[in-house]
Image (tube, rainbow, N blue to C red; front, side):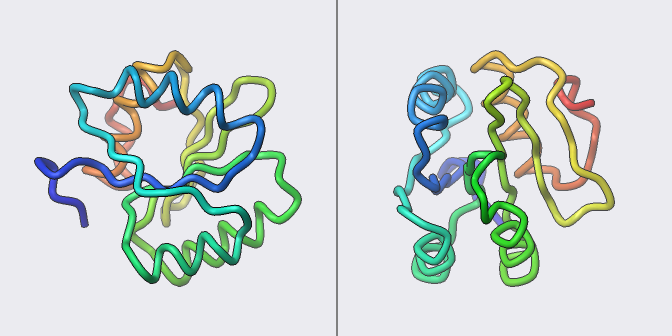
Length: 132
């Protein structure tokens, strides 16, 4: 569980789709205090990084071939982690250990940052207006 004043800790699974969008999200996130804790080059690195230094969220590309397997491992081994899956068509999905996958309704950088903070602080609650 995150300490809201310390910031939401985010780990990134490197992918070309993520690089440009992530900079915009982090730039828009100053008020929400999102902290990038590191980059992982592959799925094994994501799991190892989470074991070494817990993160509140992991950003991945929705199109990466091992996405389903990675998400399953994350939800099993780190049930409190939020996974943000960015799709090439602009869709953004939040994966949590909840009954449903959530798609963000508004995908601007500021709204993505706000939705991420809301999702991490209140897991599995669909009260945030940016979440469909």
